[in-house]
Image (cartoon, rainbow, N blue to C red):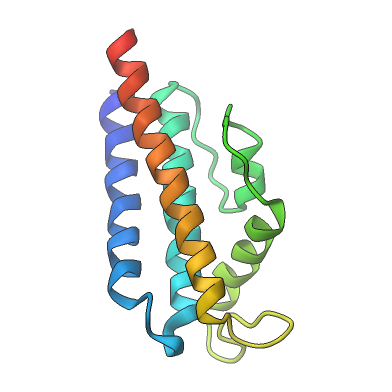
Length: 134
């Protein structure tokens, strides 16, 4: 069962990445890229947790989730913190996911998207590799 749910988490992460791919070049939607990047990372990490037959935490804070997996990948904690902040702010009118200097820039979006893709690819390989070797 864990393997199937892990794959569903990964599919959901891939859906977020697909949305980002469609809007990554739109400077007006950088806060939405941040939102979907946060979601893609969260879902990828939860796929790993599910695959390992551990209890998936009902939290959205990326650092908390990262701390609960054995991730052999360099991750900038500052980016995780920014994504967590933007995840909350981007869902509501007003700030629309503001960083200290305003909306995320296109270059910020690219960094967020790349991290989400890296974690997705890592998770995909982890699940595939672990499954093939067990």
